[in-house]
Amino acid sequence: MPEPLAGLISGMDRTLARLADQGGGRDDLHALRNHLSDICVLTEETPRILRAVDRLVAAGDRLGEAVLATRGRDWRAPRLVKARAALAALERTLAGARPSRIAIRLQRDW
Image (spheres, rainbow, N blue to C red):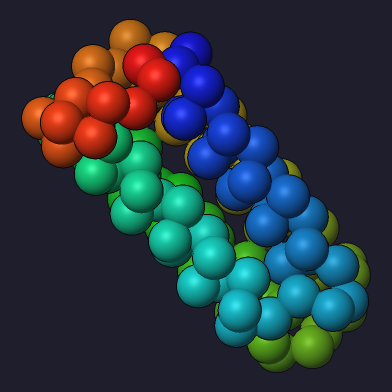
């Protein structure tokens, strides 16, 4: 996987972990969406990538709702599992991704 995408995937995994932790909150939700936005800018747009991004957005939102509802770790745990599964699916989808014209123009290390 290209280095810029691998870095974004790692960042999203850390963000999901912070969201599931007691201290997670709105800033982490924004960080997750920023990482996803960067992926969309750096990769050529395909339906598979868009679906994988949408699944992770939905899973992240559900995890964020659980965090903000302050119902405890037991309520967050299954949502974290689903969010991590969505992230793993996105990572598999990105394995064959091609760089976008913007990424090529910015000369990102693809």
